[in-house]
Length: 303
Ligand SMILES: *Cc1c(COP(=O)(O)O)cnc(C)c1O
Picture 1 (cartoon, rainbow, N blue to C red):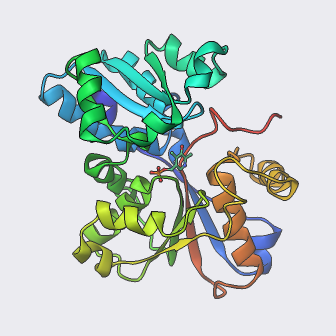
Picture 2: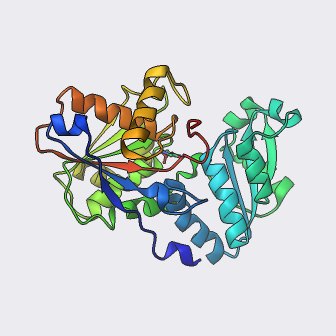
């Protein structure tokens, strides 16, 4: 699986009136450019999962997600490209009788089998009983959790830090299920980046969920060895919730930097960072790096 050997994403400077006025050096790492289909952090998170499945000679990958899941879309593309069968267990049995939305349609075109389950079954999806039922229905498969966040994913996401040559005072990413943030914390630890603050902008409206997730994905030693925190001030009410202020910001950012942000993840992270910059939260001369985790294939604003 060649594309995994050399994943790279360029770092670009973001110079604009806001960063200039506050004397901030802001950069963006374009993980959204790392692959046209298995875009962004999802490529990083799938890497060691796919390698493990291959090593165990398992030819079917199964995972879970909502109807707009970037993870489901990326998994379906990875299946097509690397010859795995893929099964997507999708939240919401009411969707069964409706036309597929563009995300699920693309997943299906990539060869993914889609199964819709009720919201109450979905809540139980990680229980032993439910997984046993899945095996009875679908045979042997390699299971990847919702959002792709497991230890193998953390290992892959840690490599986001590998090709950074410069030092930063802060590295920011958007977090949904926390696997990417956990990976960046792990990567920072491997590189002994004790002076870098790692900040995850939480896009779900869920107290303490994120800290618990991070504790389940990185060891205490690593968690304690790195300065990291969760910022929950910019989730705009929760998953995929937006308002005109956020959408206007995303449009301004596109005009200023010619970079698309999505309104679910990276738009909220970047909005939060700019709010903090405008509020002089960072010392003049600070060097900040935002990770562009992708997402523009599903939640880009219309042009
Ligand atoms: C899935 C996704 C995230 C969240 O990643 P987690 O590892 O689940 O926290 C962030 N940004 C984008 C663009 C995503 O698609």
